[in-house]
Length: 466
Ligand SMILES: Nc1nc2c(ncn2[C@@H]2O[C@H](COP(=O)(O)OP(=O)(O)OP(=O)(O)O)[C@@H](O)[C@H]2O)c(=O)[nH]1
Image (cartoon, rainbow, N blue to C red; front, side, top):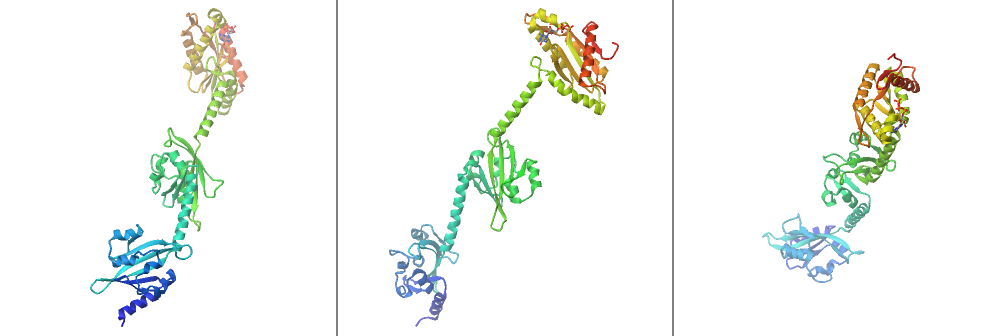
């Protein structure tokens, strides 16, 4: 007669919706419930009382997990059959669980999760084992679809020639493609899983555009870090783009154009951000070169090649603005017209080249006597103009006198080796409210003429008796 505990076990096993097998100490099947028959397609009648449980699962004889538990074998022996796909179960000391694929089951095979635990009598002796089996194929398929999707996505990111990083909701890097490795010199294996992405771009820790997108801190906080050098993307909703110079990237720094876009889950919540970076240093360098050459051209068009001073065209551009300031703010402005004395005879005696050197020396004397707000021009031939903003008649006369003395004391070495000494006559005019540029120049010019008339090597103030 069956013991009441046996009856209870039978009912428990039979009524269990989880496929369950019980074997005794001799590996004979004592229970093979309906769920197990349904899962394996083998009726209980074919199994109970025999030790051929392997037939339901394998092509040739081998122990099930329950058989190994009954024999109390070492883990190494279990591993021989389950190749690292098993572990100790939380159910008890001598119980194990494993997961494996059974190709003969169902349509195209099934993944089974099975647990085996020893059954002991009152004395603690192993009298059998119970094994439960669960079909986890659907979970496996879902997990593998997810894994495939992730691998697919990783390949898309990795295969992109555009440097790209992906950051998760906790600001940890999840993707860092090869182009990003090439740009930053930081390897994916060193940055993925960390929040060290800032190290590739900055000397001290600070958020990247992608981090600000994840935190959804708004344009104000983006502006705090990107100082007006960013804008909302016209292409991607919620994305921002910016351009900046990164002194820590590459040798000598790089100009990068970067776009960060939010990544959202099905509910629309931001769960990360993707940031792409483009090295635009080449374009920036070309723009700078263009600006430089435009600036050089502009300077060239304003400059006199012999003396390096501004030319008369630039005087025509500058003087009206200065006269405008005099009228608007009632500020003083003085103008000097300088003319080398007896320059024709210098040319005649020392040659045109000798004359040129004297003109260069005069230009040098002028620049030495000027303040930073004063501007000198070669007006034509051996005639020069100096514009002195914020200067009244006494100051202008003092500057002119200093200049006259300095130039008069200079010796220029002519190509023949001879020392040339020359003097200059200077006319000074102070701007009146009614002056136009031509009338101001004319008055200074007339004063210079009077200086010549008066014996040369002197300074004359326009509209004065001297
Ligand atoms: N070497 C050289 N000579 C120049 C240049 N431009 C003008 N000249 C000469 O400067 C001389 C100017 O002579 P003038 O205007 O007759 O007067 P000056 O001999 O200086 O005599 P005053 O002005 O009366 O003192 C002319 O011989 C011009 O050929 C230049 O760029 N280089």
